[in-house]
Image 1 (tube, rainbow, N blue to C red):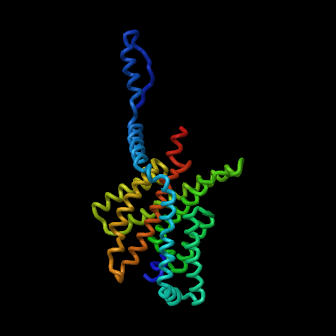
Image 2: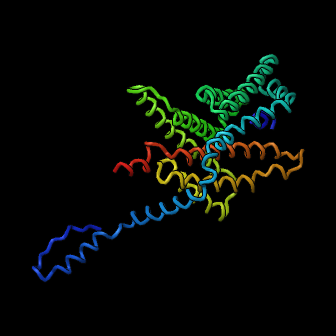
Image 3: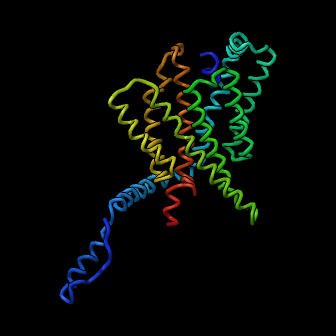
Length: 309
């Protein structure tokens, strides 16, 4: 992260209007009213698919929260390591190109490394998640300012998605609190979790928005964009959100391996750092989607409303 930012139908009932001989017709109408609507048929089919996916994912379900949390923070861990291994390059860029005084450049990098490492470890360990998430969001904002990329659209959209993943971490930590206070405080926490899940869902899809406007157009790209766009809308509104999130995880994972394969590039290739940066950022967003698959979309969603109605 730092290196890239720096150096690089109606049925009206069973009315029998034709006398006693019309009972068979009435029976026909009864059967007609029991026919499912097209929407109900679609829901039944998607429910079958969800059940099938649940069956397949049963062995890894207990590990999804841990995997999701690790993937969310992996871009920050890689960023901290990048700063340490390219320390002099970072200092030169901040001083010569960003015109930040030398003492402040050292302090800026040290604080970033400590904040990213400590907050990432706390998130993986599920300790003090609120403070850890605030720390990492603070890192995203300060690095955007420090490296002068706050008006870079691609950077902005990607980091909105990363912050969406961090909000999913926050919601996950509140879901796991077993001894919440009774009465009004419990209601407040429930509402807070509900709206943070909504915000996290919406922010997670911004990476895909950036993908739509970047790169060369092709038939395959258009097909992926259409499928991904439908899945993004379904994630945002919370309709079959788990199923949609799984689709996005598969699309992003395949895209990441095929496009951001930095390990195949020469160590001095000019695009190696960019590919590595993109690879780990997409991993973080995949982690947020895995937490969504594990937790569900929350109460502010179509999936939850249809349970009520």
